[in-house]
Image (cartoon, rainbow, N blue to C red; front, top):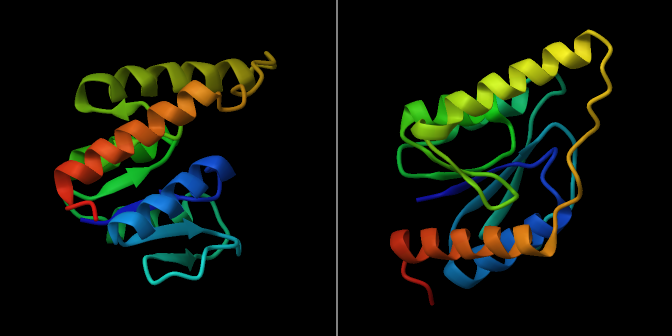
Amino acid sequence: MKIWVDADACPGVIKEVLFRAAERTATETTLVANHSMRVPATKWVRLVQVASGHDVADHEIVRRSETGDLVITADIPLAAELIDKGVKVLNPRGEWYSEANVKARLNIRDFMDTMRASGVATGGPPPISQTERRDFANHLDRWLAQNKRIT
């Protein structure tokens, strides 16, 4: 089992949680991004840099991930595609995407896109809270415990 990270928009505090977990559990963790970024010097974490362009990193994650892997992303269309493939998807705020909730979230996302396109200022998401960071870390730890032997 591997962890894939949609790294371009993943908050730094979440990456740090992932880096520590990868090292602690010897879990291959790959950040996929269209620009260079810092990753720790460990054999468990690596960066795959893809070409710039719309959804290039997303397509690479879909191509490389396998059933049972875990992907960290806030991208709802990407999450929907991965769930159909049998990949587990956790967003950086500590919420699991599932067959039961991803379609409704896609509808809300599409509605908000329509609102923004018509000139309504919808604002962005708030910064990740301590509670969300803790929820993310707890869900990640549970997934790792179920899928790997934590050392």
